[in-house]
Image: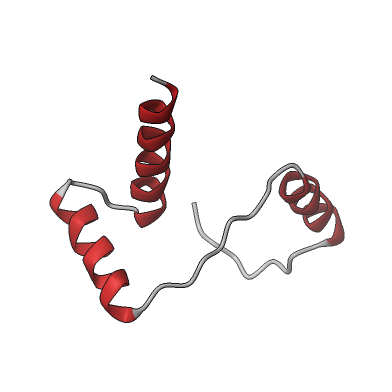
Length: 67
């Protein structure tokens, strides 16, 4: 299948906006040193995504608090 340069249309934009409106965004800033530390830890743990590393760490913390 060949990728073409079809412009993003209003219908696609509507679908994207509907999806994004169902989500909440979490953002935070870290120092370069902290970022590198997190990135290295994620790679060492076998994560290909920092996002998934963050989500797993948060969920693990929640589980520890709940028990």
